[in-house]
Amino acid sequence: MAKHQYDVIVIGSGPAGESAAMNAAKKGRKVAIVDRRADVGGNCTHQGTIPSKALRHAVDSLMKYNRNPMFRAISEPKVLDYQTMLRSANQVISKQVAMRARFYARNHVAMFHGDASFVDKNTLLLRDGEHANDILRAEHIVIATGSRPYRPPEVDFSHPRMLDSDTILTMTETPRRIVIYGAGVIGCEYASIFSGLGVKVDLVNPGARLLAFMDDEISDALSYHMRNHGVLIRHNETFKSVKGLDDHIELTLESGKVLKAEAFMWANGRTGNTDGLNLESIGLEANSRGQLVVDKEYRTSIDNIFAVGDVIGWPSLASAAYDQGRSAAGAIVNDFTATYFTDIPTGIYTIPEISSVGKNERELTEAKVPYEVGKAYFKDTARAQITGEDTGVLKILFHRDTLELLGIHCFGEQAAEILHIGQAIMEQKDGGNTLEYFVSHTFNYPTMAEAYRVAALNGLNRLED
Image: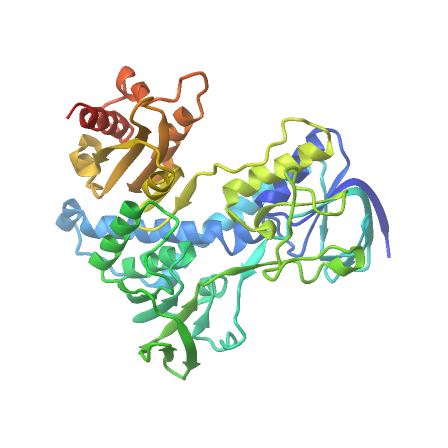
């Protein structure tokens, strides 16, 4: 047993943990990070954002190849299996691990591998791994242990055909048909991925519409596009039971429907990774979803213990986790640039992408805000016509009287990139956040960014009609 003393200990090396460790180290603190894996990066790098988005890119590239008439002169459309796509995606993981390991070494952050549990509010005991039974002490501790897929007890995940968003990345065959239960972000993304591979997809949604938190028009566009690519969406259907057989699964819904497929993916909820931390020893309690409550500085009810990332729940995005970790470290080192983030852009990597920031039409209508809409359809932009990626729309919501930007919503190729132009203008102060920016500045032509000018002119024309 070895004992170690630090200023700050971070549990978890995903985006939230990494940014907390880096910021504290750069402010001169002696920092250690603990992760149960031998490789850094957390679930984001190994089982979540990186592999799923790399897989999505591989499938999207194949789809573009198959629908581009230019390539028909040299080859017929190609069909590639799921395993080939996975091998392409997994190449990114090793690059991410190597890059992040360099960050820790460069900033002199000590690495410990094993499962950490609290002894008291300043002390951790490591279990398993190469540092098993080591004792770590610190003035401040940051919990950044992330989350895992929620697994209802009535689903037998030991069966090889019963999968979640972690184990789907280890599937060894390409199913002819897959049933995905849950039509949130993860369910919709994987429905797009599998339909892009030519797999028949049943997407079972317990709710009335896809991604109900998004702008209704954008949600409808995604529904139409997915159906157009063969995804069968079943709204208002709830789970009753699922049975795994040798060569297929049978999902029974409360409505009485029985769906059969070669694979079943549960994509309905996630749970914070707090159950192994021995929180009861320090009087800290997680909620029913394993999540911790924090204040505006990401501090828990224990004054020296902070929590960031998926383990605190909404918005459970890697992008937000980086900011949360940096801000928690800022609070620890008394750097008053620490910020509690609320207006966070959403990027959903379906095929095509969805991205939004600010209010949607439903919210503005309920709040009785006098708004107007400006739109640019990708099919009408030169860049989209050149690339052939002409499915999509950029939608700007703005105040009728002040022209203040209230929300940006985008569906289509590179939506998550395009959105940030609008986000940057929305954050301008002293009257700089108005629709007029887009008509008083020149955009490169042809670009997708030009869609902002088109949408702004469309919106201003509505005011004149």
